[in-house]
Image (cartoon, rainbow over all chains, first blue to last red; front, side, top):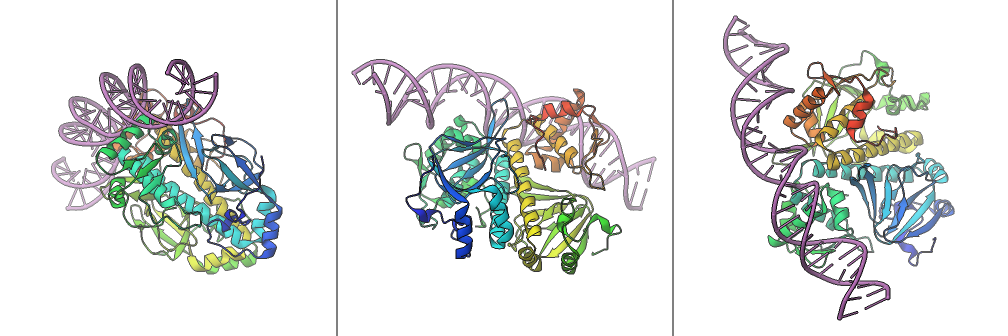
Length: 246
Length: 246
DNA sequence: GCCCTCCGTTGATCTGGGTCAATGCGCATA
DNA sequence: TATGCGCATTGACCCAGATCAACGGAGGGC
């Protein structure tokens, strides 16, 4: 189950290194982090953890895509988080998970034992600070998502989703893609529907509609070509203020 | 504009004291916090801050109710936060606000100058820790809210909202109300509609429907009597796991 | 008292997206 | 080459909730 990373650089032992934002961990701190971490891999479709599970680790997503899902008994489900590389799973200070976590592609996690990680947060303020920053960024993203779920039309939802993926797609070296004209969808139609509060039929119809209107082209099921990103942005109903979007 | 609190006990100078969760600030730390704080009051309906405003303070809501709102140009708006006493406004590490903040009742804020507050967070780990905890609690609440917006029916939305208010209503002494049979609505029908991703007409109709079915009784526009909370919970579509709900 | 305004309710009608059902399209296995 | 399975698309129909419009009732000013 545990397998070493071939390219260790993808995941420095400091969780806040992922985004190449913080390089403040000194050698001693890295040693501390290394002592409580391990890597774990999951294959596509595998359940990483389920709601209610006791969890003695927190983790940072190194590679792949995972989803955070909330379900009602009758089968309705809503994605509440789309986890891409650098995202964090689990929370310090709570031992049970609130959501189902599923690997939608092959996934590698960098796990930290929760208790020592919490201790470490208290001792190393800038890691704590980074954790807060990440949590607040996620909160901002969740709020934009709430606007999408509550007030946008199906077409706007699809366009917003495509913009979101385009913005979050990064090169292995950490830079945002310059060529955003091709968008690789990390999730299936079903997951997209659960992300957007729609049904798969509606998702499919909206893709067809956007294609017929020349806003997008489809290249297979998982690849979208956008001739003009500005047009797509217009369709998304977003304020075009260029503000930070996680 | 600035007026002293008559009952200073409502707002200890330590923001994390609000919830009576943390009483770890020692005297020196309280002195530090007092040095950078001030109180500010707003009257019902007043705009506290608007999206894009530069903000050099963060604040804790002492009394009253405020809303966090996100709007699209064409007039559609979505509440993305309902701020009740003890909730936090603004974020350390960011100077501009992402949302419109409005006082829906008379409101008193305990404000902290942002820069010294951020410095203080680095120096006092348990306050930083509490900030993280609050952010993660809000994130959990936002995710439950996303399930509501994306997947629940109008009736379930109303029932969920009533349960939410019931759970969050607290006595002045900080204890959760034992008598939850009367729910005082902190916001108008319009704000509820914006909270739930509905129109005011639908909100009104659902209230009428729940009343006709004997699930609730209405006492004026802002007060709801719930003969049996369990019935209401059933209507809300929530997992009845009694898990922590902010 | 009267008028006006703000909110909320109710009714009639419309429609976006859900539901149900059939079809298509790889891709793997035999 | 056929068989089957997992996704995605398309079509026909329906309904929950939006929209448009009228009405009611509680203040508040004069």
